[in-house]
Length: 432
Image (cartoon, rainbow, N blue to C red; front, side):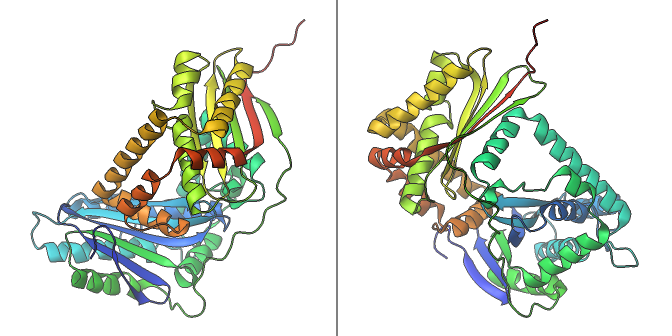
């Protein structure tokens, strides 16, 4: 094993295990990722995740499953959906103690057994559909989560900017579907999706902790692989479907909402998805602009000009998308947008100054150090790195970011084209 690069092997067609032994951790951290396209029945996938997390055939109630987790020394179980650009995954993770427990080898086997039961053996009706009561509760939980996201106006404005600027790209797909889709999910169709995912989609198993490779091999075969259906034929995710034409020019949208202040989001896109070097420069541009308290937007738009209390930015390499959002002080929408444009114009002219670029690099270094200190974060990095074509070792990835210079940032900002302008504002009073 080399540093933070995992050892990999394939115990079955389309199944890959990534293992890293790390004696710093007193727990075993296992994440099982079943990969799919982000536009592959997202509403059903979201309901499936909540259903699997609630109970399974071996532990058929929430209370029974909670007791089993307590028996495993308060193990932590999470089943969710994650998305990375045009790719997504159903993710089941379990973190449970091994250090200081009687018979840690047995504890390892028991944890893998529980994870296998949760993933592959859901509670079903006699017809084979997923349990109706669990499914109904899962639907309501997903609907509540979607409602809470719409109540987050910064997120809602940013999401609308993504949809308007990238209708041609899978990033515009709602990760967990939309309310009407979720409300009509039924047990038979979710069971069919579950069967297809386990039989025909790639599966990654990430294992991090003070466990030997031989023990992990045994546990994966006994408790995960043997529970999977026969995996014959092509094991693949496939490409996300093209959703529509790319818009030409700036798309504007103003929506009236019950808000105390205007929420604004802007989107800029490059003509084509940038390559690896330019993609890192875009990451730097977003970091310099608005991802921390040392960024330009925070220092200028918030602290100096008092135009916004909340302001930030993000970068999405594929499709080459820069997003900026702000909660705008009353009457200052125009000034804020002009200030954002002037900051982008400055970056396009000369690139960032040394102070702001160095601050971003220091924050990036600290963030990647955190990745290596947290098993779940390291597992997520392996997934993101593979999808981006980046090194699995986060130390190599951070070194590449530290090589980004001001000229590269300048060049990627020059390629950005305004794509969307979204404003969520309070209803305007009509004069009598």
